[in-house]
Image 1 (cartoon, helix red, strand yellow):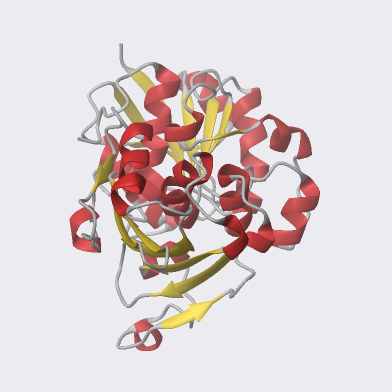
Image 2: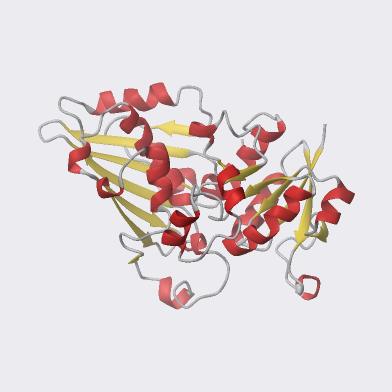
Length: 335
């Protein structure tokens, strides 16, 4: 059965990636949903010959019998539009940070603005399929994870659960991302002349994605240090995660933990001990690649986690969630 889905924010990088992925999906009919008053007049659409365009209204949801709406919009827009889509009977997958945290107070702390939909914040299901799969199919509202937390949690959570990390020594996550992670809206910081031949850190110890890592991994804030850095590339995330392994652990032991936890997972790929993934390996895929290196003499361990920030870190994972919600094969349109 073909299901109808809408995409709000289809001009942005994440939304455009959703459109591109769904072109190869056998079971959905895609509609572009325009939420901006100047949308009809804007030229240079990313998909000028793509799906049909309709307004981002409850009336359009009902008239077109739309099953799921993707919101690839800023958080404040998602908070405005999500209730309209839900009230009209559609389910929502939100790619912004609007519904990822559990309390309005936590949202205010990390996003520095008030949350206008606290009831939906409580209802939203966090959409990291590898750890939240049982709740996603029945959800009305799925909060698609951030790109940095996706790579971090897939690398950290299995080791925390297995007690393989000496948490008293802390965990350091050195994360690097391509510029598309900042979105399509022009800014001086992400302009060509600022980014090219450059490499910079930002939001040091205060990045808004930190609470997502804590939420899923079970770590305390004092145990986790995170630094985001901007690569002069268009896409991709590579995270180098440093920690002390539990006494007596080997690289093979850590790899076995990942292998057991991710057995049967289509989008996790593991490397032999001492080998590390790179960005080219995951570019334009929905894979998360993980490699482990450990020095047994000192217990120092390094895990490398690599994803494409626009695919597994955003649009690909959103389609993965959609497949779970609609009862399709989880890999449909992604492999």
